[in-house]
Image 1 (tube, rainbow, N blue to C red):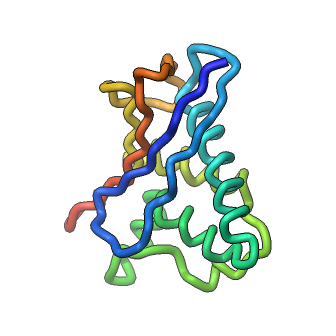
Image 2 (image 1 turned 90 degrees about the horizontal axis):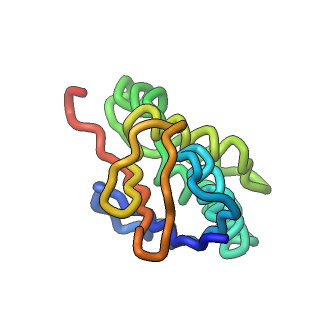
Length: 148
């Protein structure tokens, strides 16, 4: 089994804390980027659910900060400001892990999430990557530029 740490970064300056790094175990090597996202997001959801057990809405807000899809950005742009999802959506009692995985995969496909393994940027969900203790994994939320 290979263990790796996935760090989440953002190119957006914020007063809000980022999602903490999570440790993931991978029984097989190499793995697809899709599998890397799935396992990391599952671990993030579990970690946030424990931390915010009394306020799962805060956990949902943390996930929303990290993974924005092109549709969410376009809707926000049409409203005049790219921001987080509607806070009313945070009124949840559990995180929908499968929905968060889909959003993260879509954000990656939309180029709003960059994934770097070691020093190599991942290109597509079906690409394979080899993990290792000397190959840090970073999920980087990208900032949409004004005008596109």
